[in-house]
Picture 1 (cartoon, rainbow, N blue to C red):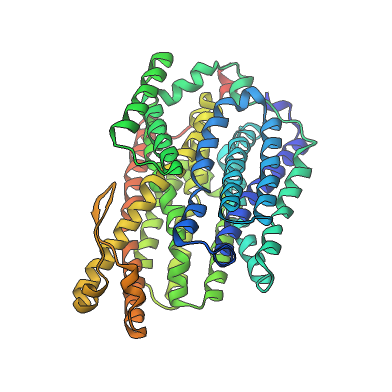
Picture 2 (cartoon, rainbow, N blue to C red):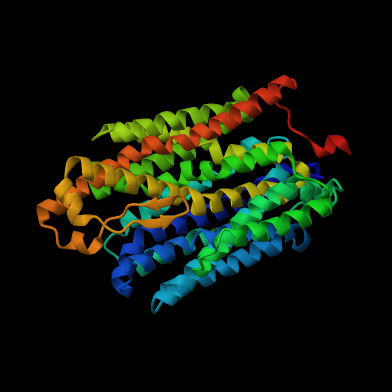
Length: 499
């Protein structure tokens, strides 16, 4: 098994996977920073900008699921080479883009590549370090905030150069991880090496797990295609998939794994979804350049903390660390909802401490408790998190903000409210108020300034309501904490010991 992999080979595998993850977040962060320049260059509408940013999410999650099902058949090296080819092709498509369609497909391909990277790095590192999975998966995922910070730094330092030069910088981490990965020989997955059948891997997810995944994937594909589905359709497709999986595996799925799946949408929204609001909040309190430096500062905190996850996990256990992290995230969000001026930086720091270990420790927990699930359980939680954030989490945050803006406008400036009030729009959370963009364009400078101030204040206030998400997670983590306590404490499952 993995005991045959010497320490030197382990480290080479780890750093290749680490740089591959840095490459994914570097592209992710840099694209978010240059989208404004792309909009000007190619005359993109707000809807087109949103579509380009959005298409970076769904293919990512779907490719994780697809490759997790086949990666043990095709091999990690094949998956890695496929990711490299798609990364290079997507960057070339984007740099030499001629319009919206080229940008769209460039973003689509990079999302597929990012999903493949996630699909192979997690099981590879968990297999290479099967005795310390939580520690090394946390260190591995320090690559995500590290890439975001590096992307933001490049944006600052290349500020006056055109967007193509900035985007070209994405080749740096891609080339590095290519050079590191190509010569490597990967160990077989822990599940495969232990002789655990493919059906047993699917059994860990079970019929209920496949229902959740099937519903989210159907909704994701529909949103990619721009199709409005009546609720019966995705539920029906998910039920068919769940029935097939249940009959094949004779399992509904592990209740503990299903509970973790339910936390992933709120977790992804807590960690990644609120990040989309953070720049605007910081810009409102600081300068645009100051906001970027605070973003780099917060990302650096997360990187450093994840590198030192080992002693922290050893002291508190994975479940204990998740309980503490969720509680701190709640405090951080409540703090952000009230903070002003310099205190925003303090609040962002508290929030960073809260969200740092949530995603990576959950991956470690799943890897330690469900090793029979192999790549599928380990990567399935990431896919459910990404899809849950896009389909439920981010729209939920938008609804909170729209309702908060509507309420504050009506309460503080009824006349302005009547001027900009738009037609209600339908969402999966019901009817939501909106503003009339054409009416906003006709406002006086004073009116627009007042509206901007109210919107900024409303966004800050919405952070308090978003705290319900880590609140739900905290309840789930406490259930798991006391479950393990009643069973003598948290213990990893080692397939090697069961052979």
